[in-house]
Amino acid sequence: MDIMNTKPNNRLFLIIAMTVLAPAVLICSDRIYVRSAKAPLLSKPVIGSGALLNLPMGTPVTRLTEKGIWYKVTYKDQTGWLCKLMTGPTPPTPGQARPGGELEKISGRARKRPSAFTTTAAARGLMDKRKRFAGKYKLDFSTLEKIEAMRIADDEINDFLHAGGLN
Amino acid sequence: MSTKIIYSILVFWLIAVVPGSGETGEARKRISDLKRASPNESVSAAEIQFGRQLAARILGNYPLYDDVKANRYINLVGKGVARYAGGEIREYYFAILDSDEVNAFAAPGGYVFITKGAVLKMENEAQLAAVLGHEIAHIMQRHVIKELDIRDDKGSAISGIAALIGGASGGFRETLDKALTDAEEILFNRGYMIEDEIEADQAGIILASMAGYHPGALKNFLTHAGAFEKVKAHPDGDHPVLQRRIEKINAVLAEHGLQHMHGQKIEERYYDYIKKIRY
Image (tube, rainbow over all chains, first blue to last red; front, side):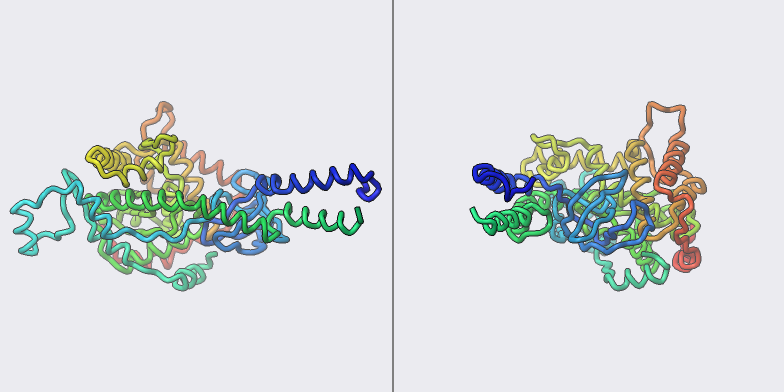
């Protein structure tokens, strides 16, 4: 259709229709977000096929179609395949802080008053005061905090993967 | 109406419609995204709090294998695989439990445990990566939380957990305690549903393969060591769970063309890090 050769009334109708429809189409655009720290946009829906680029976490992409575990997506001028496991319908949430002490309050709700035995044992160093029974269940937050305290820098992970010939 | 005006409107229309371009559309989208992100943050926090309680219970049952070098290695492998995992959890923690049984546990919020017995049954780093990938998948897919089936008034399982965590009354506290006990029961005794186990197998293979590990590693480990988690009894009782899992893994490898993919197995580094571990 040649819009320039249409009658003025038809032209006006087309312009109004396009203007009204634009926001509706925008809302319906099938947008998803990269949720993983690593998300290669692959040239084919096959693990190990060439990566066109690596999409940073939080990148919005437009979903075109899907095939098994893959979404065919566009990002800027690139079209490729993204694994569904790396995406989500909303942007990733900011990094979550581990509650630490806050959780102690929650676990403390179920905690009974320490008995004379546990108090004495703790005083003697016989019992880790954070390794205790909540009701009939044993909880070990001190070891958990030790696990959480093991920090590994991204560079160290990169070097480790590189040394193993990994991605 | 002049040609210029019509073209101007057409250009405006194209800019607004083409996804991913157009500042106005982008800005509008970002605002709506921010509004939507808030509830996710609260459910993630609840998931972490719940998982942290469960992780403390796991550690109450199984002592940590206290070897910094081995635990650091497990974390490097696990975090390398977890980089390919989407979902709400951003930080994963991995630890070896001092137990001879062949087992692994995943608590919501990003806590993954593997027993010393399982590590000793493994033949290479790829098998470790596949098992850790399987556990990461349980967390990503929220299998424990879905199995608990605690729902809020809108039917959301994770929001149901969030309500329990946020609840202050004695009733909430008792229900939270019961939910934790049920979660422990799933991990230690009852097991996952076979469908969840198969889903975790598939996702674990994909995550580890994306990281560059040998795709057949999980199958090799299961064949060599047997199942490493309890799986709920299934009506299809005549068909052994392990055999069914291996059949499904074969199907996944075939479907994704992974049978002949040459990923890394990495034996030398594996033994270098775990050589001090003994039964």
